[in-house]
Picture (tube, rainbow, N blue to C red):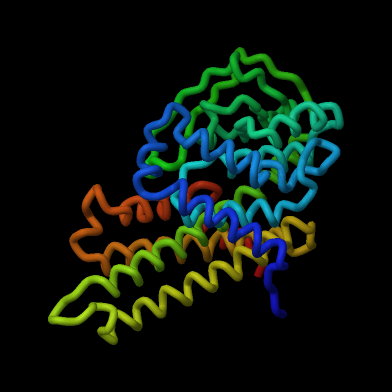
Length: 330
């Protein structure tokens, strides 16, 4: 089967890539990490207002753009390529959980806020760290009592450290918080897990492409023994292997994203395949990025360490490769 993007989807990818190339270079990424919300608010607002990033998968009846989750995940892949900190993944997971499990009143109330760019987070009730949990203004939780809306100001939220400074994690304590029942927890939990998995795979695919691009560019500029190191056959072979990993990751990610977006019967299986493959592939690409850059890669000033840290953080975010493989039906 041949699978490719439509002309409209290609234009979306090109537009987002161009915007991020201008607004999320190395200096901008490092500056945004230090921002109070952990990301560049102006860039996020541009992605929301000009691209409709947070609204792509939300139906028009809830003030969304009326496209699909697949288009939103294409944007997420470009976010992964850029290394830019962004609340897009947490907002996607939350909006999809609401679409799957919330009642009509909650959808009509909360989804327009997410589409407009408010940061949203989902607390899964397991005690795990919550992506963007300390900055979200739309806070939803999966509890034993069902899916609930949490009044953000009443929850105890503590920011947690992370090996990857471009991901913002928090612990959210709901004890004593004001909550309102809004729907089915099981449906929301299941959808959130699938979307989180394919979203992480999309981020990993974009990140792997970034690592390969950095490495190839460096190998053309770095001269050793009077010639660019990229001309050495041994290094060509290693970079060719990385290209295979990147392309295979993209195939796995797109297949899973489309399946989850369209509700195919094999969506869960493809999501776990992508979650496993893409996480391991980007970890290998990140390691080779460090190795092939040599000593410069272990300096704070170079972006290789950002690639390495994000690669390993993504490998744990919505399940490890081992956990995903255990869930694939053989």
